[in-house]
Image (cartoon, rainbow, N blue to C red; front, side, top):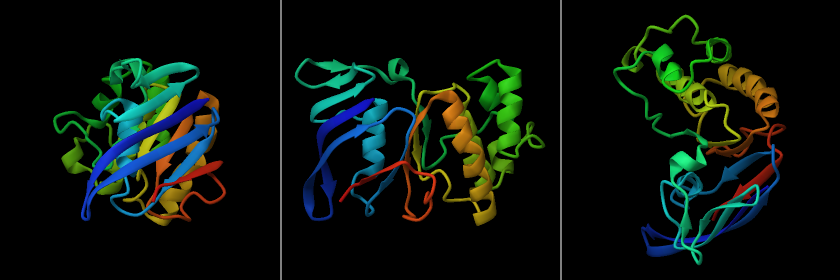
Length: 205
């Protein structure tokens, strides 16, 4: 179970607004996170990952406090170890597709399986600059999965994919999440994108 009860002040066009999130997330579920631009969707993922610090509250995962403002607990991202798909991909420019995955794991069988799922098995020697936007996005997803995370944080992970590729990939990912026992929090700019896939929803206003 993931328990989130946090607040964070955000700079907005109209001044400062307070992001207030209170949500209990069942383990193994896929949660779609929606809301207008600037509402704090990306900030929420970064707070869960330990990249941004909430102003107050608690983030607990499986009864372990990752963040507790009152008790001054704030685990480092390396201790939390979620899989994170950044909106801008955050790929290493000098690493090939293969090296991106080998940087995280030496499990060749797992790497090859991921490459097949992402349809990048023919691009293993390519560096990001020689990949299309959709291919870069798929690589970012595969890299996040390479650690076999129990928690996956995905920031608009399908925005650069065409409809067929998106549906094919989502179809492959859902059973993979289940196999890993992973909980996935997915920010989406398209409210219909995860229809029939998401188990729960969190709307940020």
